Structures are given as C-alpha cells and as structure tokens.
Length: 189
Image 1 (tube, rainbow, N blue to C red):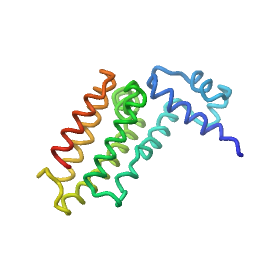
Image 2 (image 1 turned 180 degrees about the vertical axis):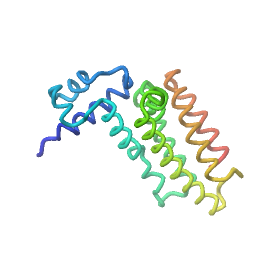
Image 3 (image 1 turned 45 degrees about the vertical axis):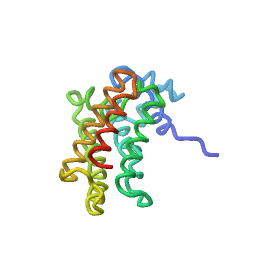
C-alpha cells in the first residue's frame, strides 16, 4: 500500500490542529509533530502557515457534504434538512468544541489574511449557491414554505447556520443547532 505523501500528512494534521486550537493557537512545530514529519519538510510543501491554511479552506469548502445537496433521490426540502442535520451531528461528534472552520477562520483571520478571508468567502458563496439551487427546486415543486426568494433565503440559512454553530461552540450545547433546524422547518420543510 502506498505511503501517504508528506504534503497530505501536513494538510490532514493541520486541519485537525486548526479545528482544535485555531490558526493562531498552533505553530508549525506542532503541526509537523502531529503529522509525524520533520519540521524542515513543512517548507518543502508550503511557503507559510498561511498558505497551508488557504489550502485547508479550499478543501474544506468541498468536504462539507455538499454532495448531499445534489442527491436527487431525495426531494429538495428533505435533502436540505438532511444536509444541515448531518452538519449538526458532525459538530456534536466533537462535543461542539470545534465549530465550523468557515466561521472559525472567518472570525480569527479575516482582518489578518486576505488570502484566507477570500477562501472563506468563496467557500461560503459556493455553499450558498448550492443551497439556493435546492431551494429553487423546492419552489418549482411547490414545496417551499417561505415566500422569500431562494437566493435570499439561502444566504439567510447559511448565515444563520454559522451563527448557530458559533453559539453551539460557545455553549457546548446542541440547542442552538436544534433552534436553527426548527426555524429551517418553519421556512422550508
């Protein structure tokens, strides 16, 4: 079986480290230790910790189970509900301590790194576009409760989710996520 590349080891380890302690709470030495690679090898793959964070955000944007939003075996509203339910369960799996990396990096780095901020914005825009698409399907099928335009509602849902994820991280409780899902059900399902 082929050995994972050092670059992939660094990305995987850094993603875990950043999720647990934030960008500013972790150093290159700790990332390389977690990856099980020599510190010098870091700079063979990334010119800076910031460049590594940009790569992690780029990947994170496509690993948020966005594929669930395209699963046409479910009607649009249940598909969206399943997506947000999955995200809630994922936060709960870590006792709500990790939060969402979009929100974490957005709050921590938006004034510090234009490149990371741009990746966070791009990821949120992509996610919002996919939620919009599912809401447009629900509207066409006559199953969308809200009279808001799908694009406006999608933006609200993604923004509200990020707020709920932050609140769940602060309170170490599922309650904010359940509140989000209750509101979702009143608007969409």
